[in-house]
Image 1 (cartoon, rainbow, N blue to C red):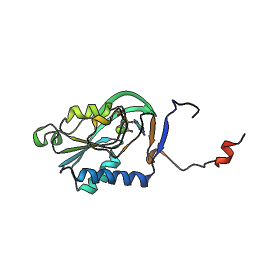
Image 2: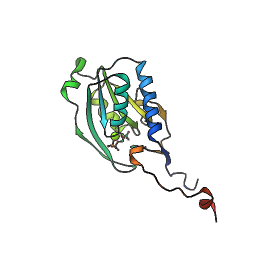
Image 3: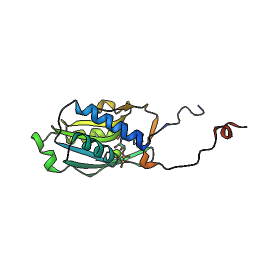
Image 4: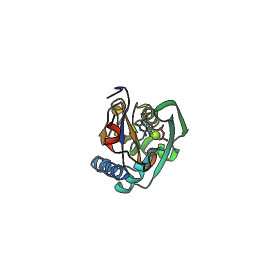
Length: 169
Ligand SMILES: O=P(O)(O)OC[C@H]1O[C@H](OP(=O)(O)OP(=O)(O)O)[C@H](O)[C@@H]1O
Ligand SMILES: Nc1nc2[nH]cnc2c(=O)[nH]1
Ligand SMILES: [Mg+2]
C-alpha cells in the first residue's frame, strides 16, 4: 500500500446493509424482549426501521447526535435532541427494556454519551470498530479502526476505469 495510514474503504450496498440489519435482528431476537427502540440519528434510522419490523417493536424514539461534521473528521459532539421522558421513564428510568440502535460505533464517543442517558439499555450497532466495541452489547461485523465505512445512502453509481488502465505505465 502506498500510504499505510490511508483509511481502508468498506463500501456497503443496500442489499448488504439489509442483510446485516436482519442478522442484527436475529442476534437480538435471542436475547429478550424490548418495549421501545431509541435510534441515534441519523445513522441509526435505517437499521432501527429494519430491526423494529423484524422484532415487532412499534414504540420508536430518537436521540439526535452529530459529531462528524465533515467526512472522516470528528468534531465536537452535539446532542441536538434528548430522549423523550415517556421512553426514559419506562421500567424505572435507566433504560431497562429499551434497545438503542446505531449504524456503527467508531471511537465510542457517541455511544458513551447515549449510555449515560440510559445506562441499562441494550446497545446494538450493525458495525463496530475496536475502540468502540466495548460500549456495544450486540453488533454484526467488526472492521479495523483505520477503515471508513461507506453507507449506501452516501454513495451513487460511478464509472469505474478498467483495472488495466489504472495499472499501466
Ligand atoms: O463512535 P463515534 O466515533 O462517536 O462515531 C460513531 C457515530 O458517528 C456517526 O454519526 P455522525 O455523528 O457522523 O452523524 P450521522 O449519524 O448523522 O451521520 C455514526 O452514525 C455514529 O453515530
Ligand atoms: N459513514 C461513516 N460514518 C462514520 N462515523 C464514524 N465512523 C464512521 C465510518 O466509518 N463511516
Ligand atoms: Mg450517527
